[in-house]
Amino acid sequence: MSNYKGKLNRQFPAKISTTAFTSIYILHLLKNNKKMYGQRILDTINEQMDARWQPSRGMVYPLLREMEEEGYVESWWSEPDKRSIRYYRLTEKGSEHLEKMKIKYKSSFREARQIINTAIEEIYQNNI
Image (tube, rainbow, N blue to C red; front, side, top):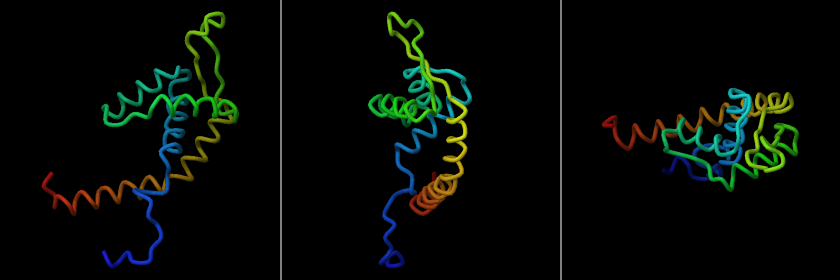
């Protein structure tokens, strides 16, 4: 533990917030699925993560609105008079933003994976 004395990097596991991670993942899903509605985004994340992690509705829907304001996604109602299902699709600007975010956070993702793998190996001494 003394090796870390004086270091200020106390974020774990890397320098990426849950919000940034979720934003990247939503943009990624929209790039691969062409159009999705909010609950389908939540369900897809839940399925892909084997129900181990899912962002809250209270995070996803405001992020979708924010991404729309930024021009990264566009949305429309399936039945405008009823306002029942709101679909989202990635814009060209959103696709460019996703690529920039992937580059920006690539080393953070790798660092997080390395930290977790190292901790698992050390804690369990390869007994898992």
